[in-house]
Length: 451
Ligand code: 4AD
Ligand code: MG
Image 1 (cartoon, helix red, strand yellow):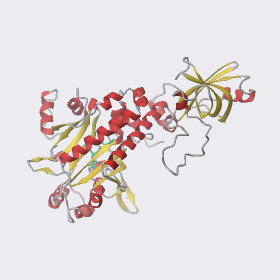
Image 2 (cartoon, protein in one colour):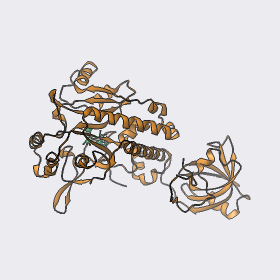
Image 3 (spheres, helix red, strand yellow):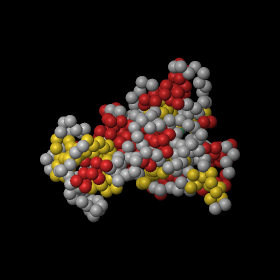
Image 4 (tube, helix red, strand yellow):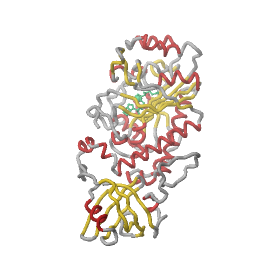
């Protein structure tokens, strides 16, 4: 955990108005300050007072610690103000660190001085609140230990994926999320008026990434993607963070190698850096350390046979998998699995036909283990301009909107592949939680755009 005084090895560095005397609670809990006087700043997590004694559990960005206030030791006016301060009041406190096995975390601070920075009003979140209320009060609920841990893991996940791409020669690019193309299906798109022209919030950056491979060969981007899907499931957001990559000269098998390497590296890095957070959330870091490439490749054809033999006799070739099918396909697995070569009819226009079987395309989904479902959608891209035009017409698309995309097949077209990974889906699996909305601080779902 980053203490206030930790140096990050960069020069010049500005870590805020540096208060050298201020101690991060994590450093106290790590036993680095025992017997010493410290200054902590934070928020009152819990409070209890009993006559001449007050106990404040104080939270900063790094942890929580119990602080004991004794009237007489702490000046009277300060004691009175601190003992009366409500939960979530902000405070600054000076005191001596003591090791105490009875205190939560094993340490406590015997306060000498306390300043109430801001006396909070009655905090509207109590224990055991309904999900609805917590969603209405999301701007306050983001302070919860659960949310703090999840967002910290996400932070480390973001660092890991960026490190991986950088180390593997990818260039990070910044495509727009305002577009006139609905690449992933017209019905699920958020439409709006863009100065008199119809425009959409982007569902994918893919087509822009395809343009950028001609300059950089291997690119990736991290942008919000928007889906006006009516699906109210545990896995759907209307806005999610989409990590997408596109690679020139690569086919479908190379594409899967990139995905499994990225996912494995990210799982291992998160397991190593977020041991405490994962463990408290119920995920054994060993589960993530055990993730190992290569992942099994299971062709759609074989997946259908498997489903037919295992509880879904009526599942027909050509149908798309729903959550129950995905759960069955990963049952008993501890590793992700690639489902490859889906029927053309249920996949997007830009996917390349399998030269060995015209009914299917060269694509893969990646299913997470334990029933977390699809985390990646990927494919080799069609490079034949006539084939793309034919499919777009079939879908009734406005060809004029795709002229720029067709240009990519006119000027030095090359074999290429790419994928999109839903960050919140990956995080849901990593953290072993139930609902994808908890993977993002301000979730957008069909029934919510506030706060
Ligand atoms: O499978 P999808 O729709 O693929 C694409 O958009 C491709 N154009 C990506 C590409 O090749 N560049 O979406 C990719 C991933 C899914 O596997 C899932 O993890 C996530 O994006 N995703 C969602 N996550 C949360 N809520 C939703 N409504 C999601 N829709 C897709
Ligand atoms: Mg998909």
